[in-house]
Length: 423
Image 1 (cartoon, rainbow, N blue to C red):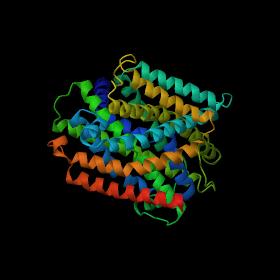
Image 2 (cartoon, rainbow, N blue to C red):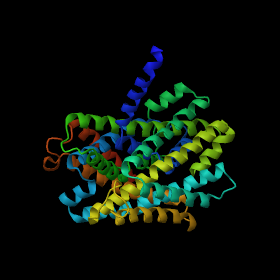
Image 3 (cartoon, rainbow, N blue to C red):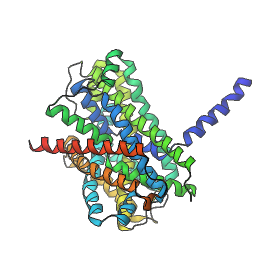
Image 4 (cartoon, rainbow, N blue to C red):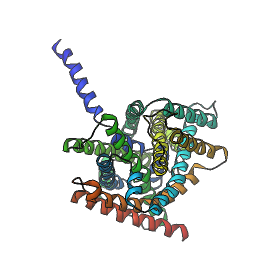
């Protein structure tokens, strides 16, 4: 009986621990959207385990930049767009919008198409286009109908779907010494294909829309809790939340590359363009269990990522043009905000009916993200070190070092991408 009485206490501890996590966990998990999964799958299929080391590199860089964004949101109690509007020239803000709006919309469209294709693969009797419409309708209903707190809780539980990808590699035979070697001993090939996939991996993991979402969600989360003063304990909790979210994001990236690298690459399948192709290719080589887990994870991550993509875009527009905004508000209280969410999802959905391929959408998205990311990282670092904005909560020297490395690598990636586009 004594042992039984301890179980509720243990469950309560686990629940309290899980409740600590919020914007950071959701942001990190949403980075592994269906289009991101397609990129990781292609990296593994094309180069085997050669890109495993990138997960170790991107984790601290993502954590540093997203940590800066989270701290900006907590300290200023406003979104990144508002801070840009108040402290920087208008051209900077409008250039960010000019690149971000089409990139995020294309990303939404690619994710909807990916989810529809996977759902059709599971239930072949229903066309993929029908699933795309249903998925879009369900997401719009949830976003408009439920307040922020409920949406945040739904998103947190959807993060668990990412754990499916951590299970998959253990269902097939692995050469673990080789896995360790490829993880900790980087390899690099100086050819167009390898550099392109490295650029794609960086662009997929360190995406500008996440900067805006993280900042706004931290500000909104504090507003919901009635926070008026940010103390060290709150910043420490935020750091734990962000670090866990980024760790989960990069762990999923690592295990998807591991799965596709050890199954598809060895099986002679070197080209993966969509997530449903990856799932289909896994079935004959790794069995129905691996195939089912991979496909189910795509649907969970899509449901998690699309509200983040649409929400980040709507917050950016609302903060730019002074609209009332907030997922805690009703539709009638913030019509322009919710209308921009509706438009972004419908435009994304329409890509399927106008014959825009998800691969083309992903290519255009990567170009836009690749060009804006270095500029945004530089601006975020500048804000994070500005005492007028951040007061005593400016960046630490360690954050600045990691931010500087991120800026250099993302700039090099952008230059490489432009070089190979016009070569």
